[in-house]
Length: 234
Image (cartoon, rainbow, N blue to C red; front, side, top):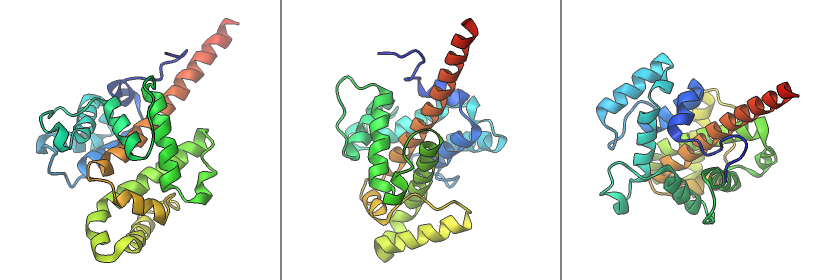
């Protein structure tokens, strides 16, 4: 079912119109903040970093889309599928990993809604969950959760092995302070849950949340344009 404005736009469509700041989050996820990943082609990395520097990531929506889907195929089941999984399949995998139960007729927007709800439930501390009421407050909370997960993803391997979950919390706190973040909407329990997911999911969970954030920004803008058009006809 489609609504009065599109809510299941392709990733290429979304990325071609998204803000540079929103796309920079995805670029940092894909390239591990410029450090690169074993599964990331050096040429692709160079393209992404160059366009990021120019503030022109909107010009390579196909590259960003392909890399996100490739991380969704990072499992034994998908070794024979170098092109990665379809985005809807990726979202379903993330939803199941977070404990959601997708319905057969759920579209991408509905699937992402469940991912958002489950991620807030798992990763946001109790005090922050009251902010998840929609609009700007929800977008801000999602942004903090995504940033927290990205920091956690970069520290899980080394810190947890040496210091456990509380050590991870300390490192995240210190890194957040040096990067001048607002208080991160992540609790210790959420970090413990996140450290238990596989390497691919440490990328795909924040990636799906960021795409969902971009999609809802676009949907709100489309809906605003639609309603303004209706008013002009009155």
